[in-house]
Image: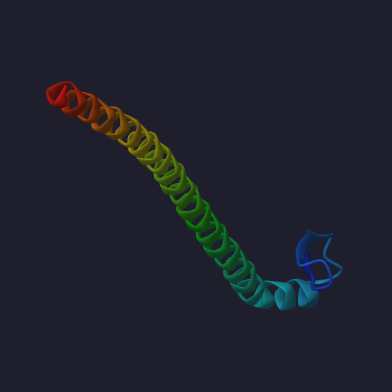
Length: 101
């Protein structure tokens, strides 16, 4: 006999006591299987949602890393430009001084 244990959401196989209980069990089997299928579909859908969320989080982390890298490169570039502009300005000042003398 097939018995649905609703407390544990499991189907159990037991020896049938008589034909009537077997008929009743067979009549309930589609209901039990439909419930199991519904539960399985819900679990699969939840897993798919979690996987999609994980993929999106990973993509965002990659974008964040790329942004951080670009920001660091930008800061380095600004520092290099600032340093070289100062040197050029001081060189121009020296040139002016030489021209005056």
